[in-house]
Length: 124
Image (cartoon, rainbow, N blue to C red):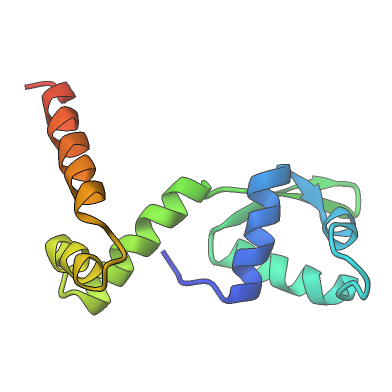
């Protein structure tokens, strides 16, 4: 999955929240001063090239829709960060969060409990 710029992530957020839209509708979601229609149209077409959006034609205009769910994007982005910065070690990532006190011992115990319960729910 190709990475997204901050602006591309922002636009995908609108599609995940609102569903299928025309670029004109996307422009209207912004507060003044709104980005130019052509600017957003270019970014949307780029998102389509990257595989995040697709479209349905309505005459001379296109209605765009997300082809990647927000959950899938989060999951793959997290995996990419762990691969890049933690040598593919989820344990290393969690250890780092514990060391920085971004996760408390109680939260870590809750995470362990959730993992244990999840393992019991998987079919054998």
